[in-house]
Each structure stands twice: as C-alpha cells, then as structure tokens.
Image (tube, rainbow, N blue to C red; front, side, top):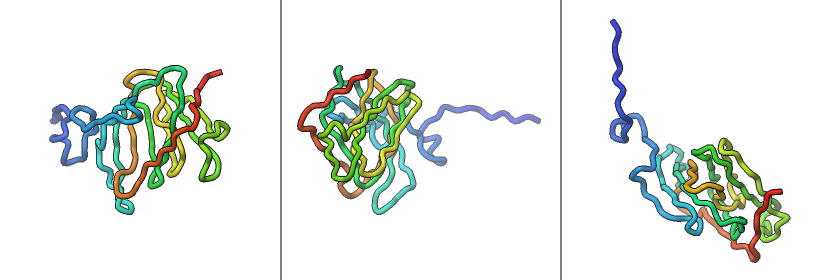
Amino acid sequence: MTKTLNIAPLTAEAFAPFGEVIEMNGAQHFPINQGTTERFHDLANLDLNVVGGKAIVSIFETQPRPMPIKLELMERHPLGSQAFYPLQNRDWLVVVARGPDPVDINAPDNLTAFRATGQQGVNYARNVWHHPLLVFHADSRFLIIDRKGPGKNLEEVVFREKICLSEN
C-alpha cells in the first residue's frame, strides 16, 4: 500500500513546531545607509547567545547610488562579524580598509574595492572597516547575519574628502 503525503503551503504558523520561516512579507523594516537601503529586520532567531548577544538574520533591500559612486563613510562592528549574501544574481561592490588599527580610512591607499558576483557573499570580520552596501541594480536584496544585543556594535567614520569608484 502506498501512502500519499499532501503538500501544504509553507506558513509561519504551520512551520512553527520545526523552526521559523524566513520571509520579508510582514517584517519590520526601516531605512538605513543614508536612505539608500531598506532593512527588513530580525527575520529569524539563531540559537547563538554569546556574551549577552545573539545572531540575527535580516534581508536588506538596497538601491544603487548615483554614478560615479562616491564613498562618504565607512563602518565597523566591534562586537561581531557581519555576513552579506545576495539573493539575486547581480554583481555588487565591496570596499574595505586595511592596515593597523586605528587605520586612517581617509587615505585612499588604505582602501581596497572588489567587484563581487551575484553568487559571492562576504563575512566582514569583527572590527573590519567596510562601506555600506553598494549595488548596481534597484531593489537588490541580501541575506544578512549579524549581531543583536547589548553594547555598541556600530562605529562610523565620515571621510574628510569624498572618494569615487571607477572601473578600468
């Protein structure tokens, strides 16, 4: 005798005994990155309580900046790493600062820019200076895993002079 397993639509309520559904519909959201990105916040709770913090999963929906792209600030997270993974197959940019801490991020020689494919993500290590999301296409979505909890986990430094990106 063959048994038939019926397939039901995935809903948060139906799946609750097994975990959490991760989706943007109905999620808390707010603008970040100088109004160029909409953050769909705290979509899943991971069981990773470390020193009073916890890992959270979010989806960021970001917009391209005007061309040529002008870098205006860098940020870092001293209490945890931050991972980005694109949800669409679209190229995007990664800008990081290198050097000893405190690094002079206002010196262009200390910055490195990378073009990532839509199938590449990054995990910024704790305390690594990086630019907020930079994309080429409107409504680009990324899955983000980062820390939520006590303590100040965001530092920003505004460039003294604007720096533009160009591709050779």
